Image (cartoon, rainbow, N blue to C red; front, side, top):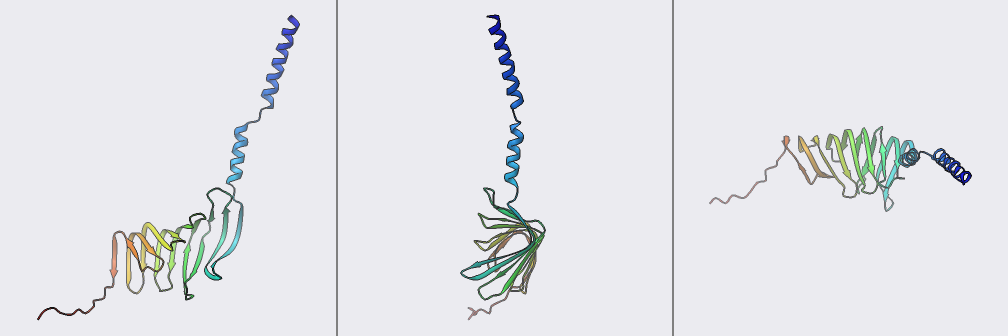
Length: 191
């Protein structure tokens, strides 16, 4: 009986030794798997992307570097060295957008532009700010940052902007500057 108890003790000790030495640090393995999933699916230099609809070019994006994270559940692309986008309207007129940094969120078609953001519209308007969000589907832009805008009719600074791409509809926060107002002649009601 004493021999069986001793064999059982040896078996238990051997079992625990095997168990503890065979274990792998699963937290580091899991961490490595998560890190691998967070890596970009690709990186490209000196890129040119052409966006079309019904065989018509709508925009051309160029950038020195593009990092593609479309392998993640919330897909996005980074442009860490800046980007330039040339938009074309139905008549072929060009508007140009530049920024030092950009993030394109694929699912929402929202572009977050940061650093020396400049929009040069086909109508001659110039918008400058440090951050601008562009909603490609709605063709709408907005910022909560201070900005300046100049064209033939406007020359002002403000904080906060919501505007369509043509600046025909826009709202701003506190406004500083000048806006041209044309006075229309009216019929006098005085007899």
